[in-house]
Image (tube, helix red, strand yellow):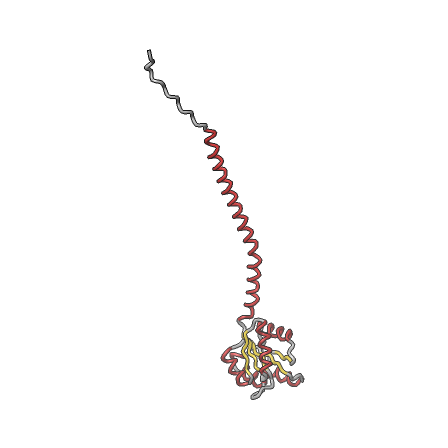
Length: 196
């Protein structure tokens, strides 16, 4: 006689938790390692970039400071010889100064009043009025009583130097121009203009 008792189906095998967890754990570990490595690499890269860029930035700022120290200073050049005006102008521009040049005494007086320079390089032998007179006229104007005026002349005699001093010149340089001495005098007079 057949057995009518229903046969219980075999229960499905329980999944192996250890086997199932292994891939998940491996994935999590891989993700964690990747994140850690990426973070470490990013930090290292940022540190390296910062260290590499620091000297360049410092050098650039130093150059800017050096250039800015004379960039706003204007020097007026009054000389009857165009090539002398050009030579002095070129030298001073290399040193960072701005320059304005003219070739006569009257033009020099107008130049000073319109441009209001920080110093004047003044020749004595001009085609209209002598440098002595230009210097005296400037000293008679209250706005230019302390303006640094450097005589730059081919006259080397003591009498000319004494006369220039009496006219109110701040310093006397002879031609050919000693450029290091010129820079020394300009730096000294612009920082602390002399009182005539």
